[in-house]
Image (cartoon, rainbow, N blue to C red; front, side, top):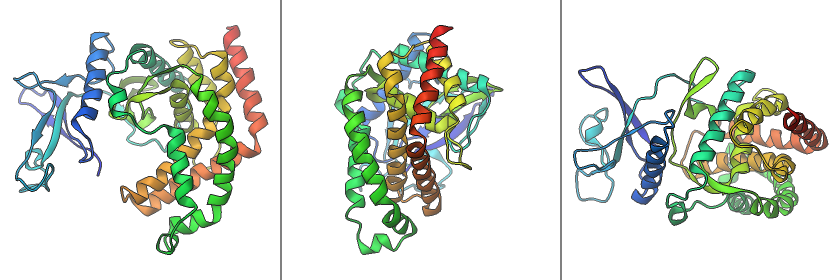
Length: 338
């Protein structure tokens, strides 16, 4: 299941967004997102949506149409939000252009710098605060890749008969061997880097755009505590990954980092760990494609395309590791000299 959203237009032509949260979301998880949005509003961060409260000052309501369980199937017209059961919230509507996807690389330097600058501002405002994230913590990225590799080592015959199963039968041994080597380097390093609350799903499809300017950012529901470098690396593979050639455009990544540095400069330790963090991000995205097929039952063709892209990206990173490290190091030195 995924969230469902509806655009609501009032008689005064004011537009709002109504969201029904996916069935697995618990109230305490939703409240974390709401606490972050309220904090951003108090700190005059105008790019995030505002929560619209009820007359009772609640920003979340629960609708249940029967007693068969906490969440029930829609009744009546499925296009009518009120015919659904679940947890709902309403948000102000963010103006701007929506890309809807993270699978299209952002190429323009100004757009990359704008996206990096907005992420730097977000980390500066929400990073120092926990918002109750410790009470609803998500498994660390390293743990999630560990779990995926463990499953790939014991795939059953039924799963191997799927296209993704057949793909993993060929590629999982190499992926997992690479992961063992990377894990030994990246896990200890991440523990020593600056930690904070991060957006958790910062990509071009969760932003609103006006030309090359980011004018809105939404979907804070995966916010959690982690090394901020993890989010920067995830953003790197989202914004700068080429889905045709399966490489990262490192010049684009440097533009993104330049924008980020305008609000929150990276430490020398973060710069040194960035190449390994990019590999971690690609490993995680490959694992995520697998989870989305096995747990969410997303379209197999789409998940296989995602999995294949990130595995090919890992192969490029493995082949050009020295070049990547040198390019990022020289780029960061030029930036610090400005």
